[in-house]
Amino acid sequence: MGFVLRLIFAATIIAAALFPLAWMAISGFKTKTEVVRTPFQFFPEVWQWQNYTQILQDDAFVRSLGVSFLGAVLFAALSLAVNSIGAYAFARLEFSFKRTLWVVVITTMFIPGMAILLTSFIVVTRLRMLDTLAVLVLPGAASAAHVFFLRQYYLNVPLALEEAALLDGASRWQIYRHIFLPMSKPVFVVVGMTSFLAFWNSYVWPIMTITSPDLFQIQQYLATFRSERSTELGLLMAGSTLAALPVIVLFLIFQRFIIGGIKISGLK
Image 1 (cartoon, one colour):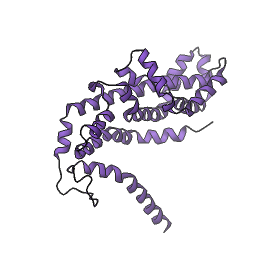
Image 2: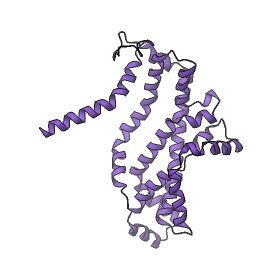
Image 3: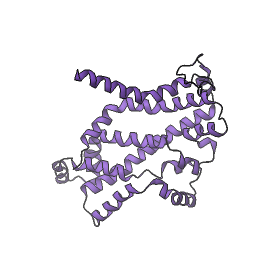
Image 4: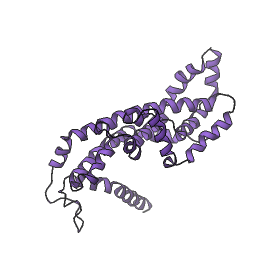
């Protein structure tokens, strides 16, 4: 009886979680009036396949997907490089004011992004980075949360491995490259996926710094439906579904590593 109740509870949670995604995907086959029809209608009367074909034939949509994917990959790679090096330094190296600097780094975790939005905009403006891919990728790559997450994992790496490498004449850089990096795949997947997702879903920063349609991210493109194309709700749902697919596919591919990375990165 207990097993059946747990199964029903789990099925209810899964259904509640997947319902919005399923409704969005099916709404992509509806006409613009069926999407907001009252009373609520889950399935369309006539399946409008042209919504998906039309959105895929839109050069602006395809270009925004490409820009988002390229930027997300670059952002994730840069985030892994910067944050893993910082995490290794705080976990294994001894240097002046280490504790003070660590407190400063951790403190930045509690500063809302909106609080520094204006100052960040002023900085990238003076650096002449506006309307470039760099303004989307470089700011935000260093993350205190990711440094903290990676540092906790590195603290659990046996110290004997590092001592043996030092005795063999290895430098700190060699230890980082040949010992810590190969062991970091599970946590790298977690950090890389969260960085990829953060870039993919970013909206406020791109609309502040990007004005060229050639560099629009997918969220900027979808935002045009709220102003210029507000009546094309079927196309909006089709575009939103296609925009969600890359992230879903990546999660399905790396879910084993994500769960494993969360489990092994316990606090120390």
